[in-house]
Length: 377
Image (cartoon, rainbow, N blue to C red):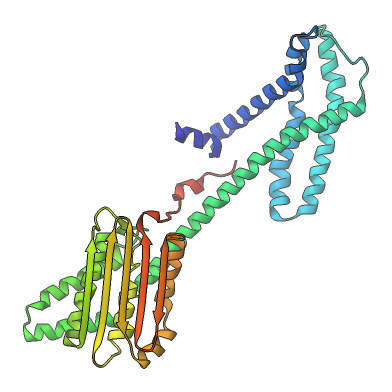
């Protein structure tokens, strides 16, 4: 039922378009007939009540001329293209023509119709001015409703199109972020795995598996707008283990991950860039005493992420010039969690701190692409 109603209102298919236009004009006919004939109920002129519906029907061409002239000519050709003066001038001309049709319709259609059916004629002589003003009022009322509906639909479709563009932008930024996963981290990890293999270490196969999972995740599993939070946490753990393999005893790493991650979703690659940044500009650049502290907790639908790493003057200088990944995450947070996240990044000469609070159930997902196919007909 909801699907039928939405198609009736929004679809550009001929059957639905004809149906909604027919409903609109039938509603206008009945409404105008009742409004103008209501005063005759329970009076000696009660036959004029039914006659008002006939009059309302005969005035429909006048209302249609003005309504369709504005909707399908003035709006798309002038007003919606910011050509206001031609649009206003043309609209006023249409209003004038529609109003002038009123005395013509009364003289050549309505009065003869009443005479043919011997319906009482209260006004024996046609007053052109009153007829003109009545036509002006009626046409502008009906056309006003029609134009209002058209403008609301136009606004709605523009809103849907913007949401789809926003969705595509998110996908493009996600692809960019995937491509920014630090290449030299992977190369260094491969070198570490190579060293382990030469030594015949038992960690070799496990390190290869973790790197494989990381590559598969970033290349094939992050194409959607959301992923299971448990998967993101698993990849974070794999990334940490690979970092430990590469850094070995040079890295003092503290990790605290707790909470219920099941049945929860998160935007992909939202947390990993922060960790990558820590390894790249913190631990990797420091020659000795490198350290990273990670706290990740989930309580209900609230995720809290806190990451601290040490830094040196050299890593500080490089961090200032290399903020693309973090800026990317900030943009995605603003788009997908516009009012449900708090990100604080603080730094000094010795530490770099990232604190993120995220309301997981408040993610903003743009509407489906299918809705854009509906046009404002």
